[in-house]
Length: 178
Image (cartoon, rainbow, N blue to C red; front, side, top):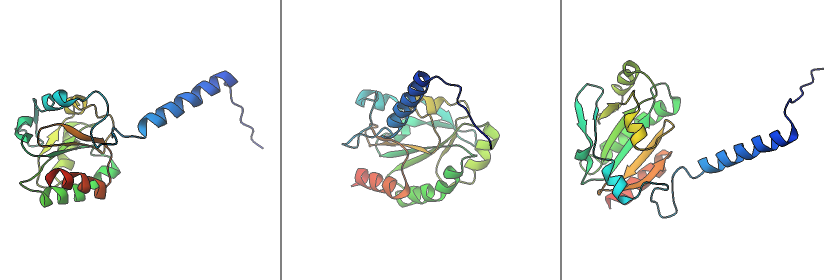
């Protein structure tokens, strides 16, 4: 019979459990408030300022985020090795097609080297894919995990930030278009 003994004092165990509970509680809201606006430090002025940057696409072209102003936008933060991201790519492409001309959709590949980002991004739908191997766009929006979305209204204010499933993403985008 194998016996496992914990080498942690009871007070340390309680501290660890408390830290885990706080961490899990902090993750539960995924950046969403009751009114649909983003939680945290992103106020209206900061959200608009977030669109004042350029980045490189997977093809090497310059992408100017100021072109997103005037229409709602969905920024999809993905990693090429992420199974969830791979599964989402089809319905994010369908969303981009469904709202073409009404909503800007931009993929932001990261958490890997440029070659892997370009390879996966080239297989995703016909909407811009950014090569953010250095994490500059991810940092700008405070994204820390792949398969996250930042949904912006037409004024560039963050309306949601975090994970969404397909029906919830579509619902949030439809609300911004109507």
